[in-house]
Length: 123
Picture 1 (cartoon, one colour):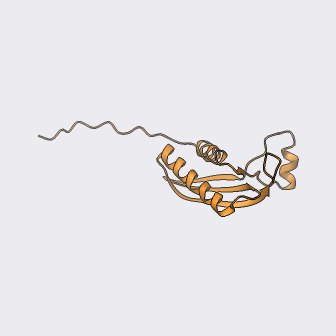
Picture 2: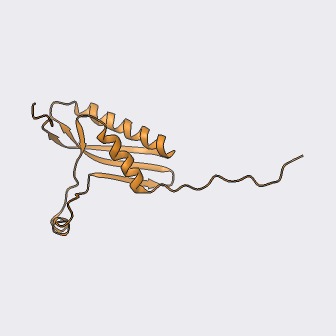
Picture 3: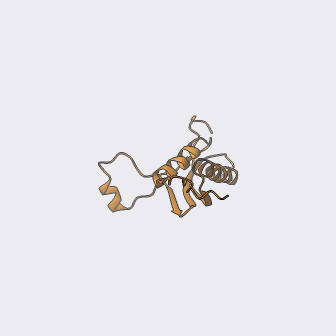
């Protein structure tokens, strides 16, 4: 005999773009030798943001349905393997976003924007 009672459906959970950005940012901060670069600003944005001490990062998350694309600009310490760290950043962001949200990561696009001196002050 078939049971015709309606089954409770899974509750809808909405994940904001800010949460996705925070996951990617925290993941990247955990990788030694890289940092998320600051976003470039044009003259109008510089004038508008003078009172705001927080400058936006070069990190953008785009969501289309259940698919996520992450675009990130990185600064990498001098002497580090650029392609190795970029690939590590791609893997880590993809794994963490998928694990924490259940969404599918379509792409993690990394652009190396700058090479920086090591934070310890020695090269």
